[in-house]
Image (cartoon, rainbow, N blue to C red; front, side, top):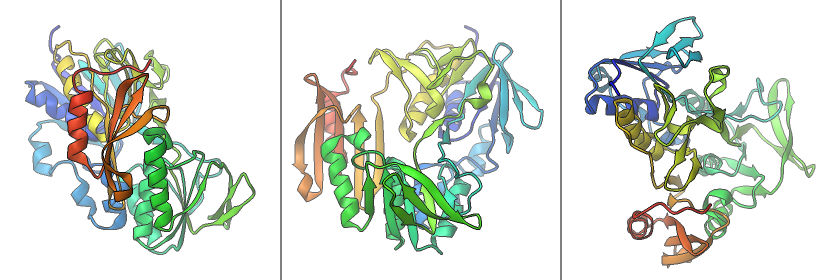
Length: 393
């Protein structure tokens, strides 16, 4: 395969920017174009729900690179323009302004779009937290609010609830699941995290659906649950998950399921690749398709995508990893922990606030969890997960 003379990357968050940097490190000297709907310099998303929302960081601190570092890439940055379509065969992308951009190879890194509640759109006081502007708008509102309702018991919902309690708000967290992060962490860890939130003063309404948002004069006033209970609110954060940002790819001929469907090389079509949250690819080690929504995957996958764009033939076979910080708790999860797994404590004691756990399915270790024990979790990962991926299928 002849390396491409030009590469177009659509989406310049962690995955897109890391791909561009990896291309340069791996020897690409041709034209490099980065297209992004955001007007801002590329920034990191994990701090938005924590340090930026809490006011501990100025927005500039969340930037992924300095202006000088971006200039050193010798790339054309097209910011503030949204991609609306792609001709995959011609490898040409059109933007909302009618501009046409082309590359000998195209890398799709458009990330995620937040899911919304019915009636949310246009209602003042209702927030989602995906981008920097979202975080700054929410922070400004929380400084004047007293009662916050967080809808969603996943990572984002838990982090926002913890940050808001740090800011002194009355917080209620609503979710369909039985515990916070139940799907991601399984019973014991999610139950302990849920208990921690309750001990910190978060009012929990779990295992219940939201019926509607109530409002007056165009501003949210509360959240009505399916049980009939009305939760008064000055502000509401909707954190019920995201979907891959693939709407602009409709009619492109690319396979779109749970994201841009790629082969094990993260290739969606000849000369077209996907990376990061939007990419669904076949993990040869697990023998099934995966799509991962986390910062670590974005940067690791970018290295393989860049290599394959330049002519390598490398499968992407990571051991999945994600982390979350809530209050003083730092949780690291390696592999594929799940609610279906049998969990055993390998080191430490949950009641002492420090432990590492192993997840087993069908007698095989499928995941490792560290709760304020990052080093021990890495050692267990090396011992149990690093030699080969473990399939649960």
